[in-house]
Amino acid sequence: MHSYIEGIMVELGNYEQFDTYCTDSTAEFQANIFIRQLTTINEFPEFTYSEINKIAKRIDVTWFNKKGYQFPRKVIEVVDSIGTLGESLNRIYQLKEFKTEFLVLHPENHHLKIEQMIEREPYSILKDRFVVKNYDEIINYYNKRLELEKIKF
Image (cartoon, rainbow, N blue to C red; front, top):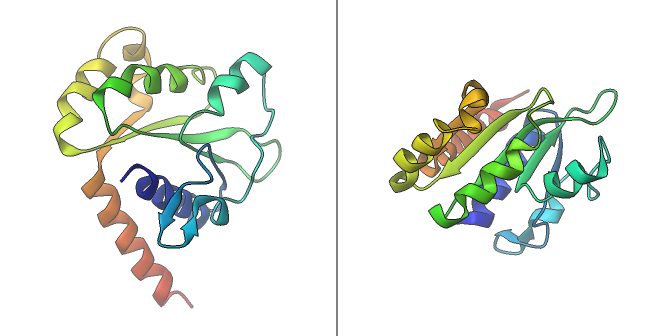
């Protein structure tokens, strides 16, 4: 499910006219479709200090603006396991000084734990920048977006 959600988020970023990067580009999105076939950039842009870039390029999916310098506009962490939540939030937190939206995607049973973690320091000072969605919400949105793409003219 992890790579499927990553692939969805890469495709949605492409539809929204962002440059897209995925740390796990060799993962299979769907049968015989790999995430590297969907991303628009293969190398993580060096947009800031190397210490921050080193951590930020491990974020699951990043959407960069296409115009001007490539800065991360939206970062997405897919949290399959609560055991990886702290590390995921710490990676996101490195981008606190940038105009970046933080999206955390999860199975429904993790929602409460994720919300509780975001209410704690140091994340609570940025809680208005976090969007927490479950897989079903993202899959439904993706399917509707695919329908819209089909009827565009």
